[in-house]
Length: 164
Ligand SMILES: Cc1cc2nc3c(=O)[nH]c(=O)nc-3n(C[C@H](O)[C@H](O)[C@H](O)COP(=O)(O)O)c2cc1C
Image (cartoon, rainbow, N blue to C red):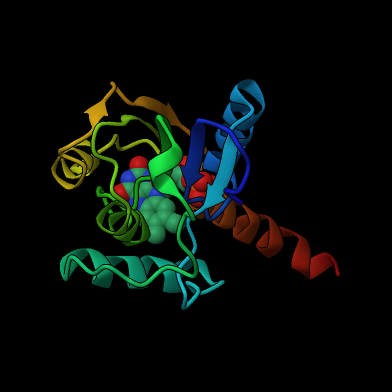
């Protein structure tokens, strides 16, 4: 978590780990402080329940409270902000992060992973919510979808179950 003397912060949200891999690489490269965006009330373990919660939060433009904030965000010059696309949009916890941390006059570098449908409205939301920051072009990466993994495992289990 954020605490050191670094001038660079890597803040990220990740459920299934894709975005976390990038965050770790950035942390090592820049000797940055790492901050995981977590909500006070955790999202469900179950994938479908998470999709439903994410949908509700998106449709109500919710800002679910975070478990913790960055201690001294003013001390950072550069903030890398990583997140997955949820429902073609910025995940609600990242919305909360941006509304509760003042990133004015900082360089903000988004890095975004998605399951194949692009970044949707997220870049626009980041620009709106961090209007005082100098925002660089986001790094965008298509990555595995948890849903696809679950579907493939379901098919495999259907095939293997008669043999168990
Ligand atoms: C709740 C939820 C909603 C998602 N919605 C989308 C979507 O709208 N478009 C898309 O391309 N991928 C979507 N995905 C897939 C993720 O964006 C993609 O797998 C991402 O790399 C996950 O990052 P993570 O492993 O860091 O959590 C969704 C995943 C979840 C869990």
